Amino acid sequence: MRRRIPRSGDDMYRQELPVDLDEAAVRERRRAAEQQRQSRVFDPRVRTIGVDKTALDAQVQDRDVRQEIENKRDEAFDAQMVRNDKVLCLLDRRQKDDIRDLNKAIDQFRLQFQKREDRREYDLYDPLALKKDLPPRLSDDDPRCSISGLQRLMGEDLTQMNRKREQQEQLREWSLQQQHDWAKALEEKQHAESLYDKMRMELDKKAMELQKMEQQARREICIATKEFNKAQAEESLERKKLEKQQQDEDSSVEIANTTEGDLLSEDPAQATSAFGPHRVAPDRWKGMNPGQLKEVIDVQQQQIQEKMRLKEEERQRQTEWDRKRVQEARAMLLLERQEKRQERELRKAQDHINLQLAQAH
Image (cartoon, rainbow, N blue to C red; front, side, top):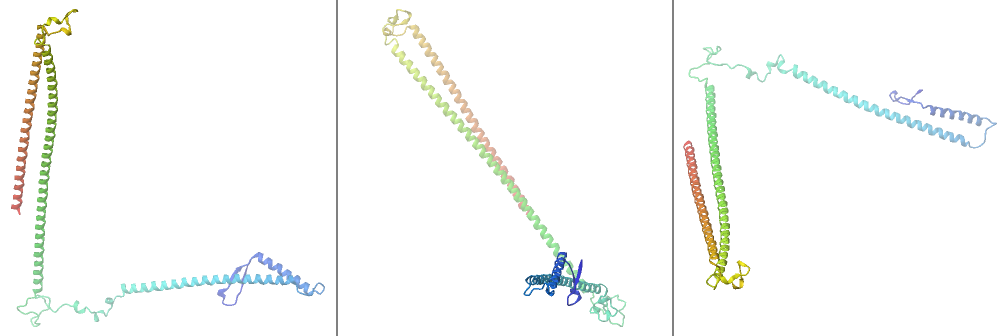
């Protein structure tokens, strides 16, 4: 159920507000209560004298309800006014946009289809009319140049501008050609210098590699020499130790032979033991018999031969080491000669390359 509530003012502010059924029922109850109150007030049989508190409360409540309804209606009208203002602003903005688009389209149409040079009378006020017009004389063969027109005279140089232009163009081409030649020569020079630098770097690199190889060979030779000297020293110490041990043994044997020989003994037979001929009495022993002496002499001879054999082996070993040292020294000498020869060849090659580069420049 909807009801139209009119309000003073223009019809544009009218609005249809929805009616609440509960609120309508409340109003109906109040109206019925008011009718009952009026019937009581105006009925002398049930009328009471004094203030009707119930009626006053009902009036106050009705006034509050009316005030609330009025406030809601005012809020609804305010919201409607805000919406109308927004709609008006949108319409105004749309109208301005349409006018601007229309003016832009008109200007674009004028620029495309209504140009000044397309007018019929444009030739009357064309600012470039004199530039567009032909000169009175184009060349010597111009058919407009008559005899009586005095447009052509003897001795004139009509091609002066073209000739100067061609000369300037020729000078410009010569200058560009010279610049190109100079740039090409500079590039070739830089390329030659770059090649020379690369070759020099390669030669320096090879020289450094040869120097490193030489240093490595020398280090290896030094290490081998140190190892050889160390082995020689160890062998010499071992040999001296063996010689000292052999000398001590020989001295002991010599002392024993001296103390137990025939020189200090009176009778070797006194040392014969009662337990057998193969035994002697230590307290009476005066020396060895000829057989024992012969055995000792044989042992000494064997020792002498063994010592001579050891000396011969030592001499051969020393000779072999001397031969190896001579061979190593000879190899070192050959290596140094080869390195010097390579250095001379490298120096000659570098001098030859430098000479070629100097001749090329």
